Image (tube, rainbow, N blue to C red; front, top):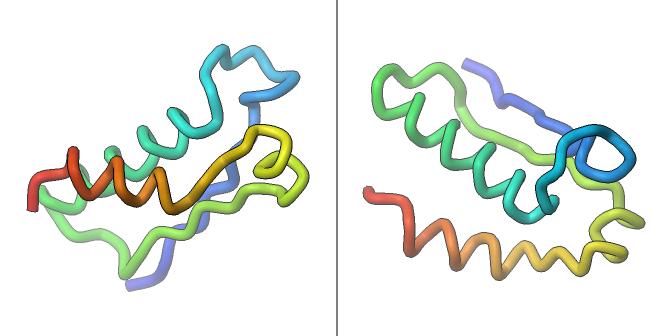
Length: 73
């Protein structure tokens, strides 16, 4: 198995009308849900350009906290 790498794109000038933080949460939730059915990857890496992270004030700690509260083990 390998690690899946997902860049967060399309939430700025693209036509996806969703905040980056919410998009990251959905990506992780989708990965977790899929892994429950059949493990398909060793891990998940989400890539955010540093400028985008700073501009959007993305806190990976807040995302981690949100996900740990909302994802059932």
